[in-house]
Length: 274
Length: 196
Image 1 (cartoon, rainbow over the protein chains, first blue to last red):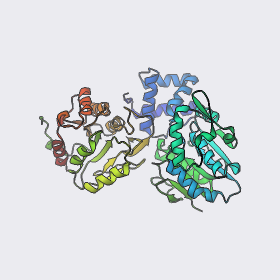
Image 2 (cartoon, chains in turn red, purple):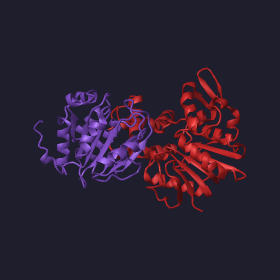
Image 3 (cartoon, chains in turn blue, red):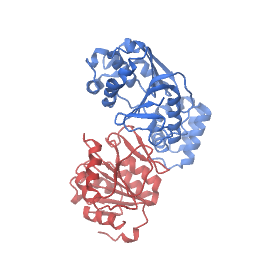
Image 4 (tube, rainbow over the protein chains, first blue to last red):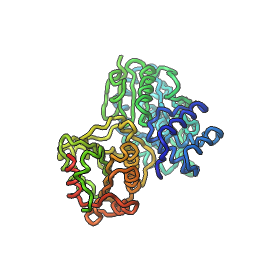
């Protein structure tokens, strides 16, 4: 699949148009990967030029809805990077246990795999009942899937392995019921989860959190947007609140590196300074 | 060796991107050990890996290379003279401002990191100042990326399939376009070293 040869200017104009018309702000996403995803969409819809794509986007909201599925990256798995979850369980949960109530924000929850990973570990630690999980994303299709809590059965093996490595004490299937080709997450685990539309590019702080998880979302942002997101997280976290990032993400190149303590460098767990 | 005047090429290029797969570690060893300190070009490497941790790869090459070796980090700015390795499980991309970004999009050519992905963005960012190199491997990743470097005016080098532990990847690259040159590892090392 060839990368589009259109100029960066044309891509930026398209993103500006999308923002004006639909209020989805991709203007500060990392340009190289946006271009790849636009190229992928053009390929899928057999559109030869970016202008043809732009024409359809501006005049056809249904088409934009489809394009949105290309612009967001839904790759997710349960207990991704198990070492992260293990570190959370061993080092952060004991602190959370001292709070009467816990608010956890999963920013960029995608199709829900991470949401239920947290739900399960919190349940096993006896923390679930006092926790409210806010699971947000910009893609309504992903949010709907996340809310359903249905995953393909052939993913169970990988999920289970991750769950064990993350320090899961039982068996992952304890939390799932099997369907024909799929597994459904127990309703009990969805009880304290609020799914909502929220954009790190355009929206603001909505509640005070004790733990924020934003993993493999920030890599798709440029530096400016990453700074905006870190600012939101800083403003949302209670003092001493925790931030978890993806395994290759960090605060290092942002304006907020001094606002957080790096608690566990390899697992990317940070604490908001008091 | 062909009729390319490599000495004249000194100063012409700013970045080298190398892709290798099966048999790549040995091939990379012979090339990367030739790079001295204070080398004027940036070097990016995608080495397809099995389950081996990337830190081991960076640690290994750090211990034998004179030039500094780092893992590609999201949003890091690219410096000359550094050898950057793409991390396991992530695509690495170069942005127009010469910083890196990472992505967890689907594998490309069954690979993540994919050589094509990095080479395509290197071609766009560096244009005629890019050098692309394809080494040994068993799949076709990198063939299209290398062609794009060529299309943007950069220099393309393919390891001679007859000298490659796994010739399929060099052969696929040659199948996509006629590279600037087809060399063995010693010759590739000579060229790179001549640009010090």
